[in-house]
Figure 1: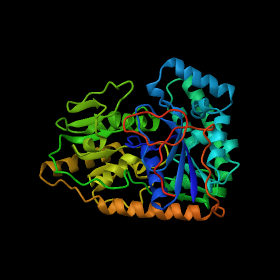
Figure 2 (figure 1 turned 90 degrees about the horizontal axis):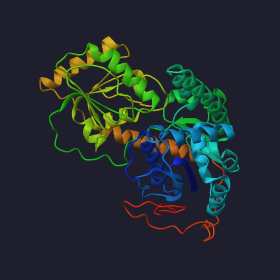
Figure 3 (figure 1 turned 45 degrees about the vertical axis):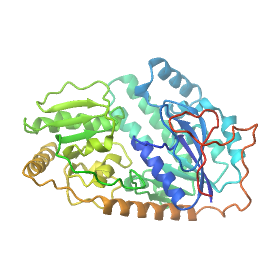
Figure 4 (figure 1 turned 90 degrees about the vertical axis):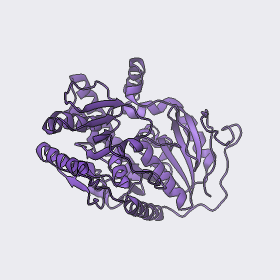
Length: 425
């Protein structure tokens, strides 16, 4: 099949965020099944596009609120209001509808469009829904926005999140009702768009990388507890604040706690062993510096990629039930607790075992293989429900429509329609 993957941010060579890791898993899975995949979307500054697939960039765009100034945020808000759309989709309108339509015309014929998350598909839904679609739901975005509204610190923030939730519900209803299949990353999300479409929804198990990295030399832990995350994302921040305010005060004073990742408005908390480390060069390597990994999600929807990474590494952990969304089989070295007292007790007990010489690590290879096999099977079932594949040869974009595809050089940025080719056909 020839599939067009439409994503706000295109899959990248070195994914780091949960969104990027999920993007790569979908792209890698589709290519592993032998399909030709053309990708349309923006590239985040500083990133390089993934080698697989044919990537047609709408340009470079920073979409993280924490990384832009007040003027950019106000411009996004004004665009959202004027276009009666969500703030997340307003960021995507920079490319323009005609530009997107031209890209799709040049890529025809194709069998279907894979609509990856709600941002770019929501911005140009009328364009994309002229074709057969499959919708990839990273979260039930409307529910996440409502949770964010409930925890908002001010009236304006609460109003904006409620507005976002209302519009997101409309967009998600439209995208799911017209899709041939819906792929979610957690079982609860399969029913998050209503029972009327749940029979077309299936859960995509995820891996953080298509090939599991070989384990290096096992090192002694640098921290008793290691936590890392995108703390600017509201659901992640809710979990971090819960851990810092309710769990950490119950931990022994001699316990060392390393927290990596940029934290807007570092909380004023106190523990003798606490260290805020900021951005670290290698997230996976940092996880391995911990004796035990706390998995602390308290809200949001979708799968927690840090949970999958922890299980792939075979690290001992204590997890909230919300952290285990989308996980079919829980490893034996993961304990579950939702109450602060029990969570702290389990962490303390596991750390004591590590200090006594029992590292409690398992091989993550079995978990990784099982996740990948289930991912491929789910992708195949969803694609089988599409219309008959096209048989005529695919037509390339004309010179007037786009810059010709070219090999993407490492460390350089592409502009315009520009491009990398290397997918399977």
